[in-house]
Image (cartoon, rainbow, N blue to C red; front, side):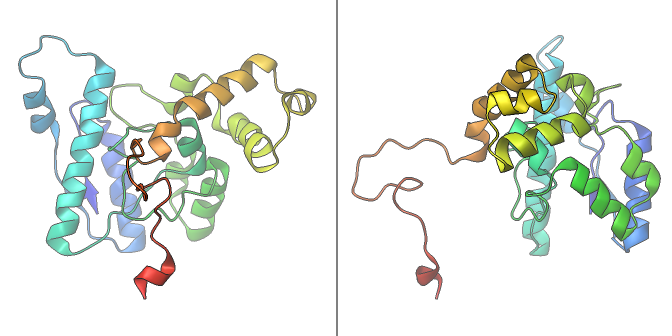
Length: 215
């Protein structure tokens, strides 16, 4: 495992990573990405912190994929279903991976799973954060708690509830439309880049590698 602190990373994040690694017998190496991110913006006086955060997330993933090549390993994804549906992640950053074993589990289910396998309680209970700048939390940015949005997403996506049915379940129309917009506007993060169809078989449109090709 790699712990990759950026310029404003909370020291507690490293301590939590070390606690999880120790609990499950994972070798952990700390590799700072601060200098790389700073050099990227060396010619700008005061870059937007979202841009800095996106670059930090992509530098981390570059480091992980390079590490995976050196060690002939797979990069394991950590984005859950809630984050994937809302588009809450950096494209080609933390959303990138070789395999994502938890991508079909909502945040609430991740917490239950973490508790079941013995993740330290302080890690389970801490406010979710990409830790890209001081005081940043997911819920503060989204303006809604994961507990609430998980219930809404489950009914909206898994159960295919209509807007009126969602309102009867206790959600305001403004919140429903906000979450719906987040899902729609982040579809590009869950798909291959759009390729104009110019041939008989277009990748991502009507050419998909079938299992027959793999035998």
